[in-house]
Image 1 (spheres, protein in one colour):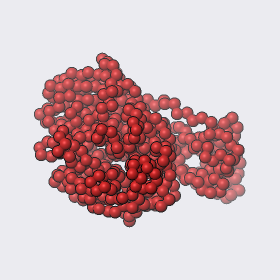
Image 2 (spheres, protein in one colour):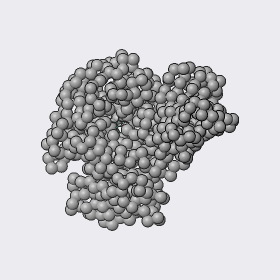
Image 3 (cartoon, helix red, strand yellow):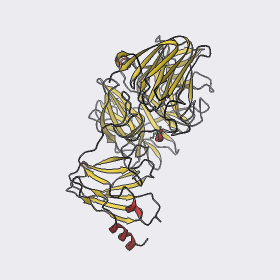
Image 4 (cartoon, rainbow, N blue to C red):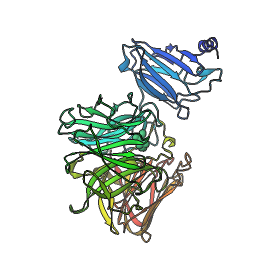
Length: 574
Ligand code: FRU
């Protein structure tokens, strides 16, 4: 299309946006698939609200401040219908000339161009952004982002009574993209307070997964007690970067010497570091392709490769991601073993992503696995338990973990809009033995006992169902629409299974309807089953299996039938 024709279309089209009083703001259509708008330095509105359609292709937006490129963001600008709005915070641009230039991913031969798409005319300048929850499936006692997309938990640490959780976050949509670290805090692992974005993409790339430690000895030189974050900068290549916080994790400053660790491999990510008393230095474990690399450092900036682990061990049907490495004890202290956590995608026991682990020894230099290479161990036997890592410095010697409660097979398609994804409940790990092998035991964190409210007769959208078993049993959760989840404990086969094929909405992905099965490693005496709006987490009360599955019933399950056991139901307070 000629420039004149393009301008003619622009002239004929509606204004692209409205200000806080509903007054139109004009913008220019630059080509069929391109537009720009000016936000004046005098503008006082707090937000630029962009209309999003989840299924639209990503448009590429440049935020240009006083002629300098300040930020690139990808937004699924609405073409046919508006699913929801996302806010661009304008505070930081006040007093400056902000130009938003967008390259839309639309067919250039469409003569109407962007002026005929629904986003044109529907961008808003506003003083408020509505985060009121109106999602039927938003969990009531699991951590979720206020709005937008979440995946892996990142940089978790505990300090002075507060649990800090950072997470992979897209502020500009409820599907994966624009990775930032957003931050939440909790004092009870049950109620979380949003602390906003902590680390935003920079010229090295998006902010992928990583870890935090509190540098009590000031080894890195950013101050005693500074919070140090290591994360993957994902640009054209993946490399590791450092950022530090001197205000207790609220704000971070990227280190000027970034990136601090590079390699000539494409999958090189998710650094997880910890202080190792045995070598009086820091260790770092990093996922590199289909194995782990282990490093050491005196100062968190200079890392020396010590060894590699994993080729030929465990499951290799996917890329290894999000590692963790920590010591665990069984019932007696003489049995301290090291556990190497390796999240893998795909390759999970029921398809897609899952958490495998290895038990062995670690001397600060090399991890040696106890089991034969062909042995694979899973931390959770459901379909929706991924990217599991532990909190640094958890109190009382605890090893407390959170998982991302979804699966890469369908995480972007689950039937929510205003937000996507939740974390599992917090779990505490220890060890148990079966048939000469060490396994990780997984129990709900003790905070979940404190969360128990009054005993009730029927399940609700937020409850814990305790089932005392005498032998094999079936447990059926159902609602008045005939939707149900059937759980079966088979004492002879030593298995526990959960069938969600008729659990409600299962049609958004072929990979969603399924039955998951766990080995129980012996007799189960009691089950603890945690139900929230869109999840079921079942545990052997003694910790020998865990199973986490999402469900999307059209109304909450309000009945439980147990054959072969007795159920006690507690509401969950939060
Ligand atoms: C795991 C993962 C990580 C990566 C992050 C990107 O779910 O793929 O390996 O750092 O997500 O969001």
